[in-house]
Image 1 (cartoon, one colour):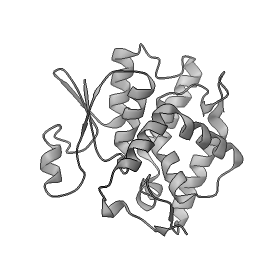
Image 2 (cartoon, one colour):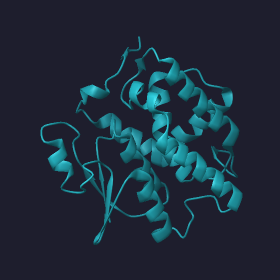
Image 3 (tube, helix red, strand yellow):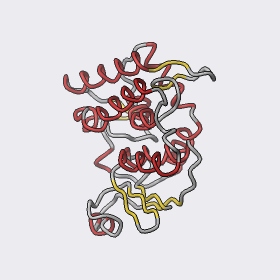
Length: 218
């Protein structure tokens, strides 16, 4: 099984399934594709007509889109362990993941993931509203598991993977957050799979200038 990803410093959608597969010890081959031009679309179309990353290739099956990849792996290799086992908790986790998948446009555009950086931006009202909603979700649904870590609905799941890039964004731009949201961020940043992705990102040197938002924090 192969997972095609973009730059770890910038590629939010690639991070989600990579963290999921790594966290749940699903063996896969990683194939990196630069997100720089020239001919980015042509290079990405080698793997999927969507011309986007990530792409999962499992024998003769190709799966694109982060959430679809996580769902496929969960169904095919994890016997459903990627979501909470309680029916109500699972429904809530899926609602949270779907909201992250489809919403937060201002946050995405104004606060691009840039793990290597420490940046200052001036967020719009729409972006501040997105930040507040993320804080609300983390504060309401993150709770301690048996190990004392805080994850959404208790145990690390696809829902947490969907929010992993937001954690990295907030680490870069440092918006004001509630104490409960900060506690969730701490657990996420300490998770071995998230920490490994971030460590790899900091070793990259390629710059995607469109994602270098704001100014360096002094």
